[in-house]
Image 1 (cartoon, each protein chain N blue to C red):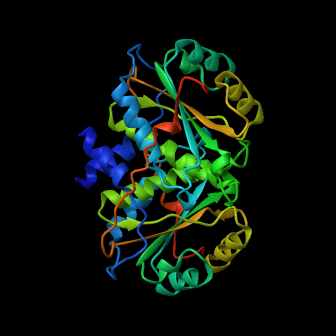
Image 2 (image 1 turned 30 degrees about the vertical axis):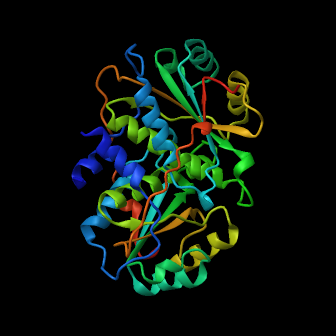
Length: 175
Length: 175
């Protein structure tokens, strides 16, 4: 495939916090979830669950209770990426955070590619947010929400930031 | 862009652990690093550093000392994605793991798009591996290696796994 075109999806991904009222198609939701599950995981344990939310009342409840997720009032859908602690095996428990973060990035990139907007709003490791989301979504204690990702059709213009900084690169070893 | 084409890059990404001896082009390395820095981060703090390794002796030293990174003996290059704890601000320190994991996934996807192979070999949170990599790369204590990502031209055939499982999805809330 075209290298530059693919890179442009990665470079054009931006955090979208404003949405039109247009509902999210079922096909698009499934593509986002499929992208999430294609992420790598330590020892291929796939220690994740995905809560796909389209219910207006549940979206509103999350918007009311989470400090940085007010855009859920207008987002038509959200995906909550959760660690499944019953699947972490003998790995350090913390690997699920890395695995679920890779899955989350796949979802954000797939949204960009589909012409949708999305934003990663953090939940774990803030205990009060974890409890709030577990309560609203009826999650058992071993299903730990990493984030809430509102998704929808972007309203207005959104520009990606250019975050390339050569000073973030060291060649071969620290000087 | 073509939705299916983009999704195919996400779905075709696989862990490549065998490489031809072909050197990695400088342009490709820069694209991988650029992709990494395009990831989102909590409060846009960008708490990361990237060590881009092409030095044969350093690659060999890492291969000798890390249990799951023996493919570094034949990989022409590697990227070590590190958390920069001086940039985590007042966020919970642990957010750097999520931010650097998103950056790592961007690098893996960019490698796939460029026809390269790569694999995420875990370092953090295993203390002995963190110390090993910090020692070989001369990293200060506040630069914490999350992983080592060998990169190169794949040798042989590599198939992506289909990891989609409908039982990993719950609609709206836990049943």
